[in-house]
Length: 448
Ligand code: ATP
Ligand code: MG
Image 1 (cartoon, rainbow, N blue to C red):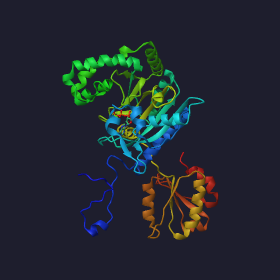
Image 2: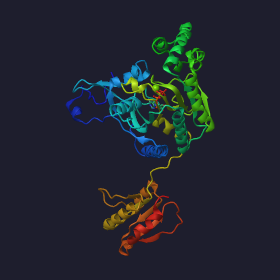
Image 3: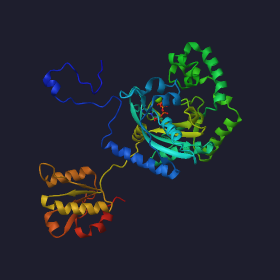
Image 4: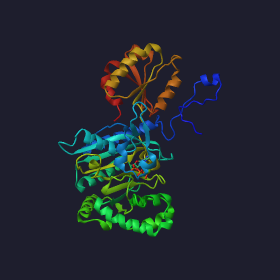
């Protein structure tokens, strides 16, 4: 039997038991180490700038929520609630808790709890860690991360369109192009319209009961819409031929959909209306959309969202129209790599070379002045074995990616100077700079 990562094997000798055992991360949960973490920070800085431009404010809610929130919010017959949730009982008090598998339900809970929409609607965003017990593979993990965007208290198609435009703006900011991702769009109408469609859908699938797989048979009467989302190749034809929800939409739902499309058309966004796009949670109505790439195999959906006008009431709040999207950060970073987007590294501007212990105090004072002036400085630290050779310090300077080395040689320091050497241009002559003037020449070293 597989053992939990923090369970120590019991059949060990005393000596073996006393030896520290190296522990491993939980399966499907990743450490994000250097230099990869620099890519995350770069991505997150682009996101923050985007949110600023669109007037979305940051919000943070707990990672753990009552299990009932997700069962009620997402729907009992969904992949997430049926088989993907990390749910547990708090050993201290018996509370039934779940590591959040998605962001929206927690944010809506918080809005209701704090009556946060009392004065005005809100545009919010969050950077969230999410947990789903899925089979780990490339682009699919058990802890993953999303940029989540929510507009709460807005009913019109204008905000749906705004959020789709935001996605496109972010994709372009990240250096992706129209050929890297495509947009699919659908309308799920209103509950009454879905009810009429549901009857037609059940009749259609019942007539083809022989090709339904186990999942589909189980969902036939509980959640037939979800059958349209099937990835089973044997069921594609019957799903494709199913009655289209679009044909059951009344004039208001149609007008909403047309309103979204009019903005997208005017903005020159290319999209495909996909009548089988239903999304994984039950809370959606009207507009739903996904941004999909062909560069990541079957984990191709990088961003998905839509309107969820019924969720506030479902969670005990006042009726509140809302729309949002979630973008998978891991998949976006994989896509950027696949698309050949070069992400700037976290290289310092300057690497400080210290040939002797005597240089330390003067050097560190100067480095502080440079940092105060906005220069990114990495100092060669001597460590336990004393001062490393100049050769090894220059090797580290090169490896750091810095554009300049500042060499704090004893003779230069005696004259009140430090030597500046370009690490990019081997022919550029070394220059002496006055320590006292550091704030003045700092500007030249700062990354443009
Ligand atoms: P999929 O169909 O790929 O399972 P989903 O419909 O379950 O995706 P959503 O719940 O809509 O996904 O989440 C939005 C985005 O979050 C996805 O488009 C994807 O980028 C990302 N995502 C979802 N599940 C995972 C996961 N297990 N690991 C990494 N990213 C994920
Ligand atoms: Mg999923």
